[in-house]
Length: 240
Image 1 (spheres, rainbow, N blue to C red):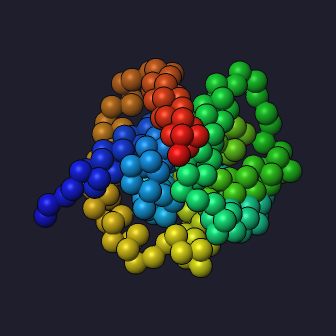
Image 2 (tube, helix red, strand yellow; image 1 turned 90 degrees about the vertical axis):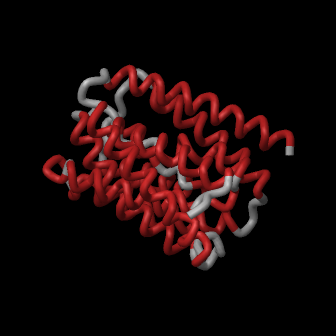
């Protein structure tokens, strides 16, 4: 099977994003979406959501003993109306506006991840975070930051497990809503299939290497990468 340069770029970004998400709990879309929306917009948002579902299922199974479904209930309830609003947004935004939107969301994610203070995940806050995760995730595939803001101070495996379990359900919700908006079709499913081996390799490599690498160094490297890609998307969005 032959792949063009666009497919190879998508595979590379998905590999890198899957590695980051497996290592720190989130980050697939934050890494992949800013460059893909510029160079290959057909991969945003549905194909990234499909890969996120695939990676999240594997991570949720690996960390299933650390998952607290009860604690995620309010976030999942909030996720539904947020996803509906995000789906409605797709009807009205151009590729240029979506590029700028994704760039700003990535920069927001970097700021959120760097915050030094702790916000307790109360039921009300989880519901609000779920809403904005749905809004951001359905419109751009970047639904992780609001949830990561509340859960980032959990034990590493608990963070990975809870975020992965949330992403399994939230990815399904987003994909269902993207169908009537025309952003999830058979074509999107077909172009996603070649990305899955790259995602699986990123997952496997992260499992093999992150135990020996300091979590903080991985986090700093991921944030630096996200900062560059986010700024690139913002500049490109403003220039279009």
